[in-house]
Image (tube, rainbow, N blue to C red; front, top):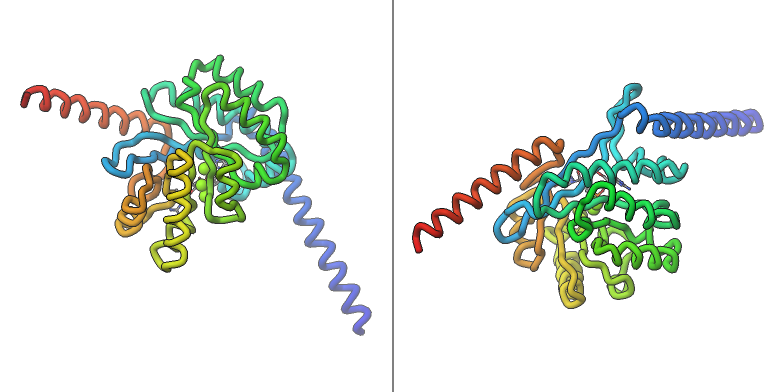
Length: 287
Ligand code: C2E
Ligand code: MG
Ligand code: MG
Ligand code: MG
């Protein structure tokens, strides 16, 4: 009886394992054809200046409009794309499309997320250079968001690639800080241009003194190293006040804007430019 039970459990385990592997394989196949089927889109989330609330940057966030199956967020499909290497062509597609869109947005900075597999690919800096040239997007307005996992797996290769990318004028941002193991020493080693505090750290800083101390000391070190600081995932006025007082330069979160299609960004930028023009005219009138 117990032997049979054991065997059944074993079969059951193997079936779900196989099923899971099959599901991942299907997902990989779907991802492989998603570019040619035109199933990807980019949503852009504005980052605002912490003091004035002006839009200063947008982050490109990949969306997959699958023709079959339920909709999946990037937290689900990006890891599958990373494991299978499909992230390489997908990542280049995102860069090209986002740079084409952002050409219309004037001085605004464009942030694009980069996976570990992309950074480890020696072809990546070359391809990036080609896309910058093709699109004519100013390298100084492009920011690549990397996470610590991008760097700890192969720090030597990563650093070499980052240096080539920086030589184009592109800025590097450390994403999701406060979620993993990235230490303050890490910030010094890689010399990022920007630090992005993860939503979980922002939320916790509003709830307990220890997390708040950690957030404040990270910001202090980042500033001392000449880095800009962005707070991610700000949803409440209290959180906005907290990160503003703590010295964050930029805020990104649903309190201000959610991610939206490029056409919506067009409208926001146009409205912002019109307002700036109006303000400029009234200031001149007063003088
Ligand atoms: P991320 O780079 O940290 O992007 C921020 C995520 O937080 C986005 O989720 C955004 O929609 C969400 N978010 C922003 N503000 C708020 C807020 O106030 N509250 C809450 N609860 N969430 C907020 P999204 O779009 O689902 O993307 C998830 C992750 O997928 C990204 O995290 C990034 O790591 C990855 N990702 C997205 N697009 C790409 C891409 O093109 N390439 C790569 N390699 N990764 C990508
Ligand atoms: Mg990001
Ligand atoms: Mg992030
Ligand atoms: Mg995050």
